[in-house]
Image (tube, rainbow, N blue to C red):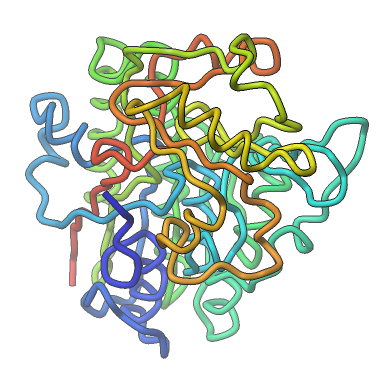
Length: 370
């Protein structure tokens, strides 16, 4: 499936939230007016995953709502940037986890915000678009981000959360307390709370297992307590950045000669690979990856991915060089790993990034005290 850009994707949610707060913004999701909104962003809470285990999340499972799609790739950095800017991946440029920095020969990890050799990247240069939080703050809305202390001041935070008042919170009790304070502190408030442990459990142990279900129960309790803490005239929305699949098959892209010949850099991640070719080798790399992966993956050129609308209806010319010469998107349960360069990722059980329903579909659930 393709992301539902324009009518039902994560990029459509920020504008609708601002419109609900009374700002002059498009409201494609037709959200109702509210004086204060809280967005609980649960990393890895795919709509299909939640639907498969209602017994572990009775509160969330009973809430009204709808399903949205993440953008492509269905990964944290891309989705956070769409939520932070209201733009599709092709517009904001965060088109994957590890991307080539054009003209440098280096990969940039957009999550860890790291480049090799001590090189640095200016968040405002890599992601220059104004954020929805800056727009909200200019119009008198208190924009607050409640998240773990370790992320405060990080490159990714400065790229996608510019304009927020960062409030550090570690643990469910702390999140509930800080969100409640933020919602009550201003007549109009836009509060985002981030919870990341469900995604971590899915990566390490797989979604649907005991560890993941235990974390899902924590998320359910967190959502319930946030709903109970809503002041009058407020709305709580629960969504996610992506879903997940458990790997049933892995291929080591570093040990298969057909997948290394002519390849300068292997970027992206295991379920959404950006393959950067050596000069003059793009056609050969495309043919070799297609022949090797066969029906196990969709393997397309950069031009095909762009023209097919994978990154949205438009890709800014400045961002084209960040997209691989070849883009490989696994189907079913295949993970394309690189154990020598990325040994931890290669050991994962759960992965995301591709355009399967389990990875792309995310919930948008609502509780209101209007």
